[in-house]
Length: 173
Image (cartoon, rainbow, N blue to C red; front, side, top):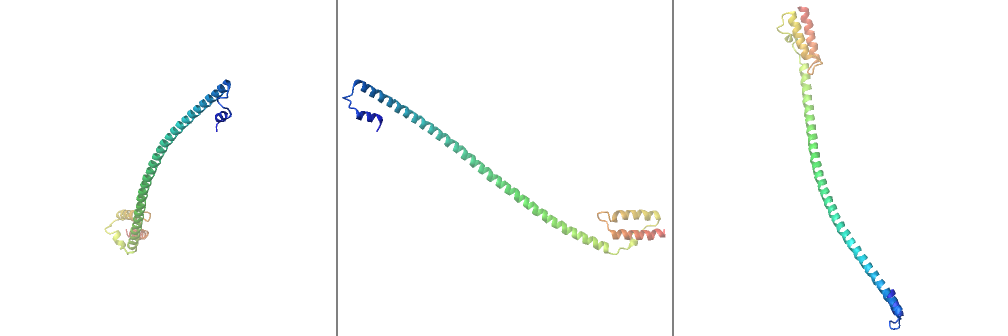
């Protein structure tokens, strides 16, 4: 029950004086203005609320689209990363296979080198056709350049054999 209803109940309109009726009308007018203002305030609040709700929905749509695009981008980056990882893994596997093949080849080479150095070489064949001391020196220098142990394909045993044969033939000349 409102204040106006209480006042109306307390007074009988027929028994009220002119002044009291005037005060009552003034009171009702003020109440009506207050209700109208409150209604306007509620409508404004409702309009603001609806505008905010609409802007919130738009903002949510934008954020959802951003989230979806970021998820898509992340998924693409993950796929790209996985491809790169697979390429690297296969590359490392190929490198490992190549390394093993190289080690086997090196092992074969070392065995072959050892068997060549272990074979008995006719030392006189090294200096075959040499008839002078100058020819002997020239052949010795050529052979040492080839078989010196500091060279990549050098062989210590072969260098010793060349030196011994050179010393023997040098005494002869």
